[in-house]
Length: 129
Image (cartoon, rainbow, N blue to C red; front, top):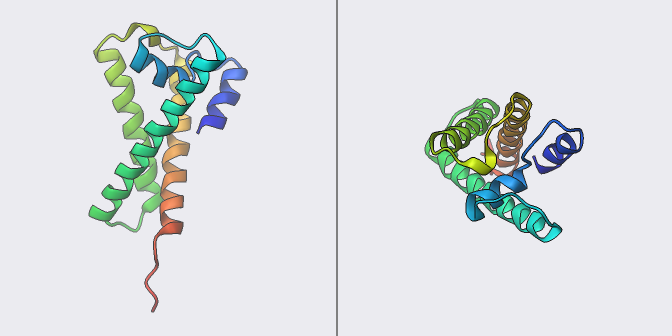
């Protein structure tokens, strides 16, 4: 997710990369130095790790055969929840959010959900028949 986000940032599609989201939600400003960028990236990795743990618990509670659909839906729900929270509370460092940013975030959230689901599926012990 971060690699795709960084590529889209360098292409000019993204106004606020994920490391800016993490840093600005905690400090109230976007990154300006390399140190702030590294701290923002660490915050982003911690946040996505926590989201992965929540997904694991949800998968254990709600079993399903359509694990990729479930993972994609989880990523999209997280995307909507984060964007609604930013807009609902009027968080200024991340506003306004351009349409290209929304499209980029939707794509990367979808990738995150699919990779999370596939990773969870591969690490889950299969029943031996």
